[in-house]
Image (cartoon, rainbow, N blue to C red; front, side):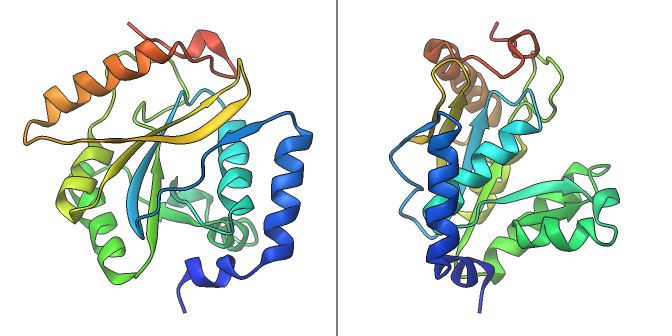
Length: 194
């Protein structure tokens, strides 16, 4: 039984996560993408609190959004907790190996929704990483341009973002799309839009 199915049936936990999300003042717009396998982008990523809000959002629908976490954090007992939350230990030193590894993970599971922050870090950056788009292209799955806006406390998986064969052009188009949304990060100074 996949991680998705195990979590999907924990209705009590889903209700609790939904109530907690609302109690924290957040509004969910829509739900997770309907496809069983997708790459979901999360912008802006300026705080570890983004992970908590995203976790509550997906869990409130009874789903798991897998996320990449550096392998060094998977020591006992934290590693067990992270795995139960859908976290995948990764070695970020080799981007090519990382993409292949995640594509392989997606192919092995019937349901696999991967959440990625294209900024690649919580620090302010102007150049985003194309890894999420490459994973989606290699795995043949759609990409959704999701966001968590701390200004309005709104979280959504957003719209399906069409990919082309040109990763650089796609990334530039993606950044332009997000710029037009005028989002606010938990730490606004860490989110660069131009």
